[in-house]
Image (cartoon, rainbow, N blue to C red; front, side):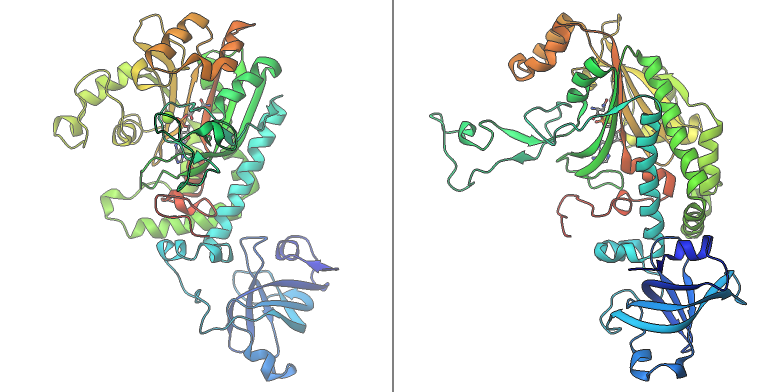
Length: 478
Ligand code: 4AD
Ligand code: MG
């Protein structure tokens, strides 16, 4: 390891003439002379130039795509197009061979679908290198944003006994033997004999616990994995995804919207500033993907233009009621082009409706608020109209819903009534209700789907391509 340099260091700050050792993986080896070396530290590769006659031919034969090598030599200006420097190799060592017959990544373009089958090798490729470096930058920026604003990071539990969203899409956690599980008198599984002495599941959201902490530390956020056993095979759903959930005491819905907008814009600005090369690489990829689409479905904006567009326009704030009026009167609704036609107030919005509003009608990010109470979770604050709650969804072009949040119901009686109506037993959430019993206050929060954000920033169309090892129905390889 000593005195090694990364490709990022070589390209950014090591002067020409210096001697360096670089380790990395071979992308290509051409004309018995030029090695394209990658170590993932930068979007760029390093050209290592060797004089084949100076090395044993046995060694040269092993310079295959995929092999891991260590090279020592001098950095010099490069006469080649597209690179300022190259490495003139004096010493060459093969650290790990790769059989060129068997290595699945050939030096050519592979489809994203093909690469999903080889998720363990995706980090070796240019596209995924850029995606995952950007994912890192975004995660770092999330923590930086909240830290700079006085929020505390709370690690909410992964195993819980509650279903925060009430959608019943939970993965059970149990150590009981499914073939010999103990039974209660009425024949059900006796979870009192299970590991936790009760039924438990993987969390669908850290919100309820984040609320408890906001009631003591004022402004907090949780950022962790969440799990949903919904059987949706779409390009925007995962069974395991990461969610960022800030929760703020004394915030009302407008404050919540302001924070959500400021937060997303900060994250986008951060990557534009800190990872322009990775964005440029993905912008090129996206432009090529666009070329293969029919003319009328192509986006007229490049990736970076889309990001700048979000930065320079305020998100449109539209009530659910206004949105329903727009959708009812819309062309695709009248021409019966929507799969789910909007007939009346109260309809749940599908992603086709969300995308119509964002991509066709308003043509900018939209925050929808004040949704019908009966299509939203129990914890949202009821409005005076008796039918809507202080919910907000942030909708993004190409993505649909990227954030879901609300002002929370802090009034004990209202919350109890709601839980009763939704058949949520009070005993199961006594600790949650305690924060309303003792020192309740107005508060709000939201959840940003991290992968959906990474999708938007990288321009990757499928959510499976922005998480290292996607979990989806029927798929938990790797
Ligand atoms: O709208 P959701 O279900 O909201 C909550 O879970 C709240 N408890 C958040 C809060 O107020 N603290 O989910 C929030 C976001 C969605 O807007 C979406 O971006 C993402 O999480 N999301 C998913 N992302 C990938 N795969 C899935 N299956 C997702 N389900 C939700
Ligand atoms: Mg939602």
